[in-house]
Length: 424
Image 1: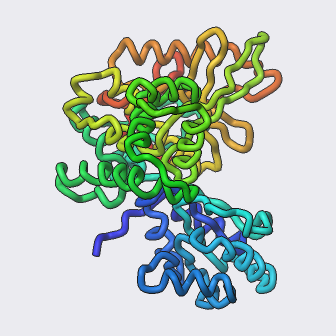
Image 2: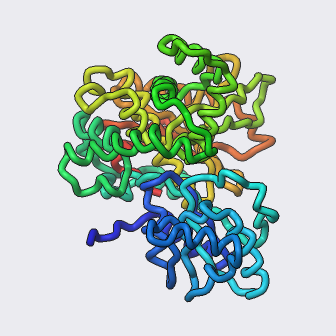
C-alpha cells in the first residue's frame, strides 16, 4: 500500500468538522478526495462500489437513513449518485445535534438537483480539493511561505534547482496522486488516461446527455489553447468550427463547458474589482483555466520536449500550474484567487485576497530577467492605481517564476519566488 502524502486539505477538513455536522469535499476525479477523507473517517460507504451500487441507490430511495448508520465521522463517497442522501444527511445532523458526523465526497454535481430540498446552510461546510500542489508532491522546498508574505518580511530566502526540463515534466505530469512515484513515462500516461476518461465517459455523466467525443476533443483543445485568457464562448465556438463540419452553435458549446464545470475539470478565475484612484473600466470576464495543466497538455497532444521547443505555449501552461498551486495555498489561508484586467490593458495574473481584506498581487513568469522585470513593473503600476483610502495597502508584490536559483526580495520590495520554493 502506498504511503499517504499529507495534503493541505487535511487540516482544513479537521477544522471544518469541528464546526459543522457534515463536510462536502468536491473536486475532480483522481485528485485524492476519498483518500484524504479516509484518514479521518471511522466508517465508510462507497456509493459506486460495483458490488452494491444498485442496492445503495435503491435503499437511498426507500430509507436513506439506513445508509447513514455507522461510527462517525462517516464517509459517504460519491454521494451524488443518490441525491436524496443530501437531505437525509441534513435531517440526521439536525436530529443528532452533534458536530463532525459526516464527510461526503463528490466528483460531480448531481445530474438531478430537483430531489434536493434544502441548501444545507448551517449544517454543511464545503471544501474544494484539486490535484496536488508542488509542495504536497514534495517537489517544492517550501522555504517561502505565502502566509508569511502577508506580513511583508524584509527578506526571504530559498533556493531552487528546477530547470526547464524538470519544469516541463511537472507541467505535463500534473498533480495527480496516482502519478507520484511512478517512472516518468508511466507518470505522464496518467493525465492522458484522465483526459480519455473525460471524453468517453465522465462528461456524459455530468448532465446525463450523450456528447460527440470528437467534438469534446475539439472543445478541450480549444480551451487548452485559451488558457489564461478571457476568451468568450463565441471565440471558442469559432475555433471549434474550423474543424467541425456539423452544425455548431454557442449554446451547444456552452452546454459542453458547463458539463466540464460540473465534473470540476474546468475552474475559471473570477475578476477582481478593487477601488481605484481614477475611473477605469475593469474587465469582468472570467479567465479560463483547467484545474490542472496536464489536462491542457493531454488535450493538445504535447509532451515535455514539445513545451521546451515552444516557450510561448510552455509559459501559458506553466501559468495554469501556478494558478493551481496558488489556489491550493490560498485555501489554507481562507483566501480566494482572482485576476485583474482593465480597459487600458493593465493586467495582473493573480490576486490573492483574504477575508480580512488583505491582498497580494502576483505576476506569473516562466523565467528570464526581462520577463521578471516586466512582471515587476506591472505589479508596481497596479499598486499605484489602487485607492488606499478606501481599501488596505497591498500586502506584497510577487513575481512567481518557473525557473531561477533563488527566492529574494528586491530593493523595490518586489519578491521574486521560484515556484519550487513556495508553500501555503
